[in-house]
Image (tube, rainbow, N blue to C red):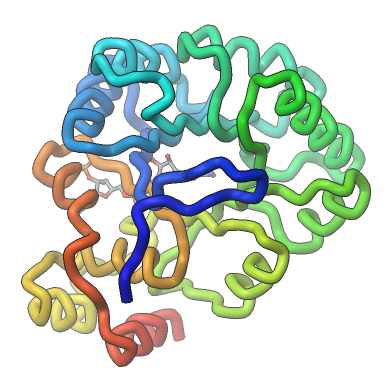
Length: 258
Ligand SMILES: NC(=O)c1ccc[n+]([C@@H]2O[C@H](COP(=O)([O-])OP(=O)(O)OC[C@H]3O[C@@H](n4cnc5c(N)ncnc54)[C@H](OP(=O)(O)O)[C@@H]3O)[C@@H](O)[C@H]2O)c1
């Protein structure tokens, strides 16, 4: 099965299917890892207000010499800043040293009362040109349906934990029916990379178990954002477009979640 390198979000924004995660990378380590990732070919960087590394990422982007338009940048609003969404986005933009982010996410659900007003603030930020696309993270379908029903605007994407060890075909389908892209986080932390099934599939393709995990996401249409501070692994994690898992292998990997 061939997989394109980008997916188009509702609203027309193109998102690279493999991004670079930056949670727990701070200071010099964040700068070095993001510089390396950009040199290696990553064009999608995932950060958050909570990660405390937006300034280092901004500097890495600047020093990379790449054009701003060539990089897809995601940041996230902590739920407890819901009432200060606008000023929090401004701080992110200042730290990242950009005029707009490509995707702004509500990092996790706010209280039920703040859910719709927060989503309205996101819609306003996009209208003001401060975020090209908007979405959510760690939301369930009921929460997404509520903000959609009350504003007429569905999130473009939901960033949630995902791996072959916790595959949920029904949940994936529910996102697809709503035109909401699933972006999987912690692909490795939520996998057993020593699993015999992964080892067998990896050996059949001459790749690593980690690459099998990422390829499995892509063949399910799930955007994935692995994090690594190790240069060889940063390269390895982007090198997942040159092999195809068979449908039998996909079924075997899906079964790891049972
Ligand atoms: N929205 C949310 O609530 C949320 C929550 C969690 C994460 N995220 C996002 O998702 C990103 C990824 O998730 P994550 O950081 O939790 O975990 P992850 O990407 O699943 O795993 C990172 C760990 O795997 C190791 N690793 C990386 N590549 C490897 C490879 N090829 N082979 C073996 N081990 C490898 C890394 O080690 P080294 O670094 O030492 O190489 C690190 O210990 C985060 O960085 C963040 O951007 C979002």
